[in-house]
Image 1 (cartoon, rainbow, N blue to C red):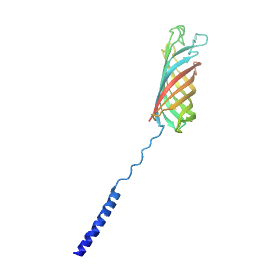
Image 2 (cartoon, one colour):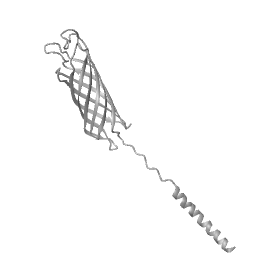
Image 3 (spheres, one colour):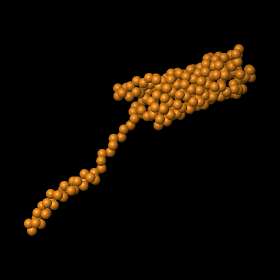
Image 4 (tube, helix red, strand yellow):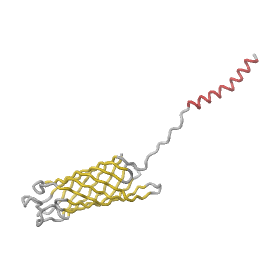
Length: 209
């Protein structure tokens, strides 16, 4: 009887220790903390729009080429190549309002306003970044340049397509919503065959996936 009592006493001390060891072995470990990038970079979608100005719309020398303007809108899809470079493809549309004496290349058959559709590609290089109070570079000054194939309407006014090249500076701010950035750029443009100079002021918003 004394032997049984001794065994029972030992078991009463050992069982809690074994149970505690099993609990420690089976207890799930702490989940790793989920961290997010302060600024998302990768594939992006951007839209921009604003006023577009042409100092001398396409037309033969000696015919009216009045200073003209109109709204412009652009949609771009691209990818960030690290922190400083982005490449993308875009499609841009504009509607230029001119005076009634503008006849373009129609020889006087038609006159007036025209619209432009331009698919193309662009490169953005971020040059200087400024950090906020959390040491995150949210504000960047950049240069953007590109080229596209300009198609005009009505065809009787401007029957021939042209090559559009453009470049200009801008400023971009990465918001605390991580995926979104907003910006403003001023872009100078040139129609190669038509010899037309222009410029645009374009606010923009971008979403990175």
